[in-house]
Amino acid sequence: MSKVIAVANQKGGVGKSTTTVNLAAYLGSRGKKILCIDIDAQGNLTTGFGIRKKDLSCSTYDILTGKESIKNAVIQTEFENVSVVPANADLAGAEVELVNMEQRFNRLKMQVLTIKEDYDFIFIDCPPALGQLTINGMTACDELLIPMLAEFYALEGLTQLVNTMKLVRANYNPSLDILGIVFTMYDNRLNVSRQVVEEVEQYFAAKVFQTKIPRNVRLSEAPSYGKPVMYYDKHSKGTLAYECLGKEILGEPLSSIMKLRLNIAKD
Image 1 (cartoon, rainbow, N blue to C red):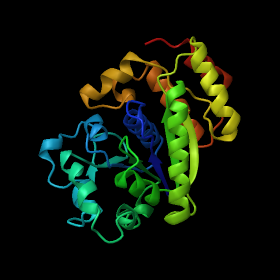
Image 2 (cartoon, rainbow, N blue to C red):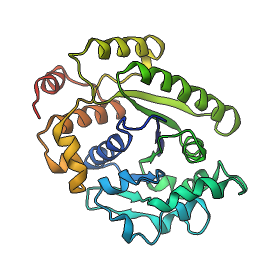
Image 3 (cartoon, rainbow, N blue to C red):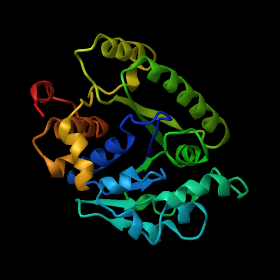
Image 4 (cartoon, rainbow, N blue to C red):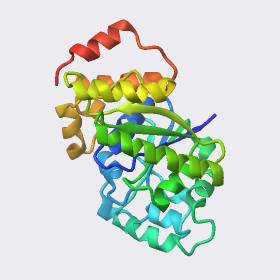
């Protein structure tokens, strides 16, 4: 059965698009059919797969405003089993236009339902805000994947996100749940990082992924080449980290050897 996952956090710069791009690429390489939907007007997910935003004839703006069906917006990427519904700056206007539309929080869900069974995983890359676009993402998905930094300010943001999730669950999507929390740009050498992880694990013990995504030069470089990191440098620490996260999402145990490789890998 297909699973729809929204990647969300209202705080910017936490690695939402990076996580979506690289997780999708890994799962695609494992034979899973993947669709990524970009609902962020910045279009970082779109760029991360090497799609030129200025060349788009159809985007998520057209989908949400009812001008096109989602099937007409799907672009097959050059990366194994991965397709994208792209976004560009036009999407910034959707927040205003949606205000007066019927079913404004269900518009993405209605589109996703028409293609859901064509894919094993559908990832929705949400914008860094708790506005109408993010609520559309939460309403359309089965579960939330929450990338976050191991910083104290991030704890406050997590609380706000969970409160919004509860409101969406109460009003639009009663089955909505948290798939997991993944720490990104993680540095185990910092006391504050370990403290934040411990605090989150105290309240969300079963929801925190074992895998921590480290700061990694190759992860930062890959988007400028329009590639997921595994296609840019398959031996990098970033590639290994998203392989580990992908295995966890597939329900596969992480071997002690893989954990050791991740701990000692270099940029």
